[in-house]
Length: 386
Image (tube, rainbow, N blue to C red):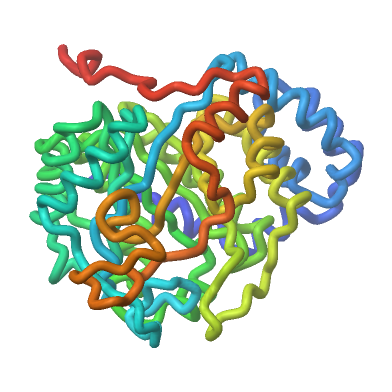
């Protein structure tokens, strides 16, 4: 029987993580910085309050490791929402089934999907991330597989960020050309997870927790995980995410592992962020995780402001989205502020508000000003051929 991360996760309850942080001093942080290979206790030291005086030294080491493994490159990608229909009730999300908004919910038709793909390809994008809400009975795995097939006509790399699926369904996506999968656990703390996921398939904690291993067995080449920073105490969710990444590296070594760092900023009125992550916290997370996971790709979305994203470029980031929209049809079909006949005069519902609203060309210029090269395509599928 294949091992499961569920068992590994059960071996690291909150109490055990709390013990890792107990008694950490600046001496422990200095010792962690001096190591070539770091264990979970070292990561806890680098994430602890005792590490704040060492941030500059951590930044230098994070920059060195990132350049060693990835060079001076930032890979660009774009999110493409194919549907905002959702049957789940995640209290922090704009797509929630219980969101009382009058904004339009819709699923892109094939002509609209092609129009969106063409608009992104025109900007030069070679990597796209297809997203949906949690509505598997309406936007079925077959529908997503077809969207992957269409997108592969326009892009060399297609990934998805959708609801958790069965291994056989992931195999169907791979047959259509899927390269990567992103799925956030949101929070690894079981009790908190139950409090913020009230309805729908997503309320099943274990099914979501084990989704990545099903995707790995199905042959998905890139597996990207993350915690939604702000749902629970970040010092614990980050440790659990690090454990998850290391486990995936060991058990699904055929796949490249990535981590994203989504931070809760704008939320529906019904939900107030209880564990807000400051900019200093965010920087410490990036630096500590880079020192613990030097060969893992780090993704940064347009949830963060333009100035903050620019400052993070040299500190461990390897992939950035640019010119993003978080609504279906947001690039060419249903532009924000321009309701169409199909939307009956209403705006199309967004998942969340973006902070970095710069056009793609300005993001590219900022990357170059930082001394890095923007990369449209960082992998060729020809390397998959035996």
